Image 1 (cartoon, rainbow, N blue to C red):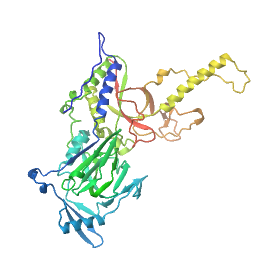
Image 2: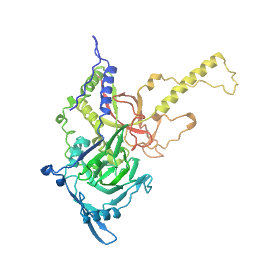
Image 3: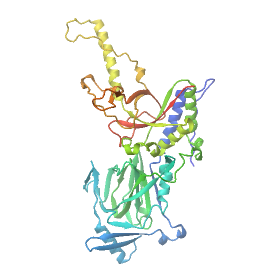
Image 4: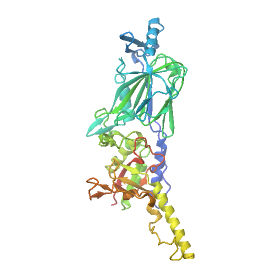
Length: 472
């Protein structure tokens, strides 16, 4: 196992400052960012007969021949038998042109995606990702041990499509899948043992790319890859043969083998590369006697605007998001998830207006205008200190975006999120709440912004982890 070390800031007689410790944690998390797990792969072997290629795992596909009115059968891996080759040709001919989703509509565009497909109501297979341990691996490697109401929260796989990408032009350009449910967490692609060249699966997330190339073992080996639903992926062009795959949708479930969120002691969290640095930072903040808020901007996107998923949202955190969440719970006893508004444009506008007002008033002192001058006006007060906006974000009191009926005059400039009012009793109610509060946050990685996943967010809402630190 690769080990990562944390460089402690140099100290003389005084202990390290909060800024030093915060930089230490940020540096450690940055190291982790390049190693975050967002896609995994594997292949199947018959361990009882691993010495013979002919004894690799086999599978059967059965489908309806709608032209003849009866069922067909194909056994894989393919053999040279004429009947088997004829059956494979019939399978290819039975596939329909594959479409893809755009704005909730199915689109057929072979310049973007050229492939054949068969829906699950037209075929079946004796292959099971459960029997071969694939779902167990996904639960362990991607689900990372999460819980719901004291029960394990795991992953289930549902067969979705059979797809065929054929030479010379089978491909699927870069895209992000449309989730079939707000509980969908990813996809599993199983490459069946049919010889082909090209057709690599490229999966991208956070500026990183993993490429799965199954061609060299495609003739007799079942290979697979699983990845999160917010990952961009692409099927490169098939140059020879046929790339045949089974696609499964992966969903969070109320059950599963994972239990480490219930029992934090099963993971040696002290061995995590950032844990010691984080522990020192939080202890330093608590000893300062000041109320402090720390935040971690999630690296994955989540369906936090859906009422059916909000309750279990903190149980469906992925990768480094879950690791940091569990570390905060271990050290502090609690952590919460909140949505954050990107108010950078508003803050920039306020700072610019303050500077412009300062210059305007200085000019008035040098050249006082006539009281009757058409552009004469009183001073506009921008009495805030610039530091008031340093490291601040507007944090929502609810994960759901608020709906405000209040009018707004756009002539006065950008809306201050802190001033948004929401009527508790509908449009005619006189009882209002303010769904956003402006807070200073010490970010463990970076503040929400251009690096934040927003694919499943509404407008400019993003997701972050938070915890209050109360001084002694």
